[in-house]
Length: 463
Image (cartoon, rainbow, N blue to C red):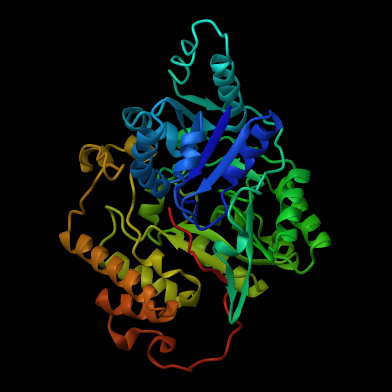
């Protein structure tokens, strides 16, 4: 049984979603090849050699990219069993089946992939009666598992080297960056997030020994920084903090970054110095909006005032916050967008907000909890299988026009290598805010006290 695991995109990281199931399959004696198409081309020979081909779909971008790859793979190897797994697989079941995907796995997928490989190997074994008959029924229903798995240390040998992935930048210094996961799923039910429709408020932890061994191997491969890909690192704080404390004892010069909700940063504010003191370079937090009415619709669990409190506390203790935003929603007015920019400037976060965050538009994918809101159901158009979303238009066309202009500006300015502050200044102007109100750092180079460089990843967090 030859298995091919394919990732199309995973935020510029070496995909945990390939390395983890690869370890499980190799333990079963399955021959596994991994392809990360974000860093290497599709290999026709690998496709032709595979009996089971599984696509890892953890996010919207990865799924849209897969729509072009799955037909190519199916044409090359029409008798292979195609599988899709990850968050966006069960959310797009009908569409994936029309593309020829037979098995769809969500939640904790490693054990299910092993079971699928076993079943296919059994059906394809020489002398098996009615060879292929049971294989035809595999994947007849989408399987979403929340089993508590006995995680294996990820197998990363078959993936591109770490230096080919996103790196940490701190001023003029660049650090080779690895990634891992200490948990999956999330205990929260934010309406716009793709995790709740699958996990329903559940989360699962990866044992500490597995996480630390995964990091140890990546350090041996050259990593000097680690990104924790957990949707919320503080879902299980009693699990998370001992991991970074042990990590720091073993690798005192290794830095890392994590993602944590504003709600948790506020509730656990007295424990944030542990992150700072164990090498945390920055904390990403999905602030999403500074409008309390929008935050309530998104069920974020925090308010504008909470964001202010967290930003002030983290600055006071010397821990970098990198907020992310859904800058454009059906409830965002032109005045509201200008207020967002003013808030970022007033909180002295201009150099800590990745430019892409200034132009992100709300996505409403299949299965989104936003569809539970009557006002959203009446707003959206029928599901668009090209974009894999329910399209929506803002009641004020000027808002959509601004979002489009900002999106193009951010892409072009980033490609030219402009700084985050320069791009923010462009957004300030495009939003119609007067230069007279702009922070001095946006209009006068060299003004203000010098500050230590803000750490960031070369491929910014996206969706």
